[in-house]
Structures are given as structure tokens and as C-alpha cells.
Length: 322
Image 1 (cartoon, rainbow, N blue to C red):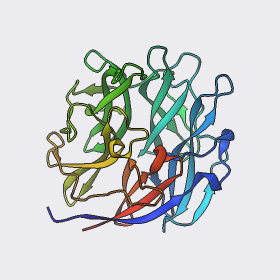
Image 2: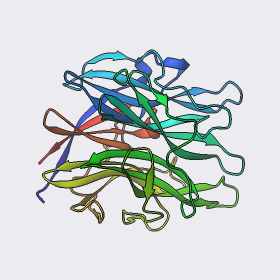
Image 3: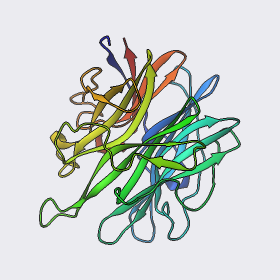
Image 4: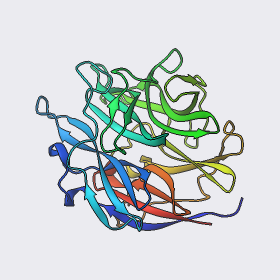
């Protein structure tokens, strides 16, 4: 495998410069693409304030970019999917949303958030389908298609789906548990990347509780948002990872971009340094790199990602050079 290098092309979307739907302010988290013939639609999660309690609600919007990935054609004026109903798994937010074409429809795998009492949140993965080329999505049901189970007790989310041959493959995250890392602190979560398969994209079989990516930081490493692409006949996964505690304001413990490769979709070899995407001192991504999404457009491989404060200031773009 030759040397690969990410060439940063800068921040391409700053949410503070656009009017976002649903009175959302700041934040364009987890950018994920749907490529059209003459433009690229980038879905992202933004945030509104819940008037009931002052907490955030995550909504999904999109921006359409020309194929140069610089010029903005439009920003959606409404969220593409309403939040879930009272007591549902996605009542308090959808973040992220992963989209893929299937036949003449667009499938969206949503990560639904709901607030808890003893810990802050739980998550699960839902499916919604668009018949209007990704402008709006309708849930296939009120419940999730992948959720907590016997050996994955909490925090199933961040599904990324590709159809390879006749099989749908999902890479996702699952929580190994919550823990108070210091007596006075709220509990923090740890999660790892797993894998599931499906014949129809709806009914999934997990490789239950098998973390497929080796830890670099030890057992308290949290791994999030896997994204998989084939490059020169080999599968490459990009994801983000961090320490499970003291990561919000301590930049040494915050998110970075990880990478692994596989020749059989089962065994993954971690190699974060080839290609390496690192922070840029003094820039919008000086403290943190998170929520990567890798995609191909006109024969080139790109990576979208968020920077400081978990995407508060928008997302940037890098081009793969091989």
C-alpha cells in the first residue's frame, strides 16, 4: 500500500453565515454526502434550543455545493426529517444521518437521541426513506432498526451503510458502558466500532459486541462515526477517537481522526498515520478533528470533517493524494 496524504483544503461551510431552518444556531456536525450529476448535497446536524429546558435539539439540514465543493448553491430552508414522537428513541435529536441511494429511493440511517435521567442520553439507529431525491425523508416506523441488545447495552448509533455485492454492511458504534471518572463529575460514556449485515437494509444481524478496531489509547478510548470507502481494491475506514473523560476542554484528550484498512471486511489493520490528518495550530481545527466522512466525487477521494467544539464552526474538506 503506497503512501497516502490528506491535503487540507480549508473550511468550506460556516453555519453562522447562513440562515438555518428551525431557528437553529451554529453547529454543522457530521457532514455526509449524496452526490448528484452536477452538485453534491451535504447533510449535517445543527442545533436548536429546546424552549422547555434550554437544552439542545439536533435537527438535520443540508447544503448543496457545486462539484468544485466551494460554491454554495443553496441551504435547505426546512429540516429534512422531523424529530421523533413523545418517548421515541429520536425524540430529542438526530445526529448524524447517513444517506445512500437504493434503487430510485434514498435511504437515510439516522442516529436518534433521547434524554435519560441517570445519564445524559441514549441513542439508536433508525431508517427513513426519501422518494424526492433526498429533500424529505419518512420513517419506516417509530422504532429503530438497530439498538441496544444483550451485549451492547447502550448507545448504538453512528451507522454508516454500504451495499457490497448483495449484502448491506453497516459499521456503527456501541456503548460499552457509562462511568464516573471522578466523583464530582457527570458520568461519561465509552463506545467502540462494530459491524452488522443485512439482506434488505432493514433487518440487521450484528457481530455482537466485537469491537473491530484496535484501541490506540487503551480501553477508555471512545471511537465514533466510522466511514468506509474502497481505494485501489482495499477497504479503508476513517473514524474519530478520543479519551472517554476530560475530552471537552482538554485538547490533548479530544477527538482526532483514525484510519484502518481491510482486505476482507472482517479484519481491520489500524494505521492512523497513513494517511494522517492532524490539527492546524491557530486555525478553526486547532484543538479537535472529528466526525469524518469520506466520499468519492469525479474520481477523487475527499474527506469532510468537523473541527473545534464538535462542529460549532462548520466543516472542512481534505483531498486524498496518493
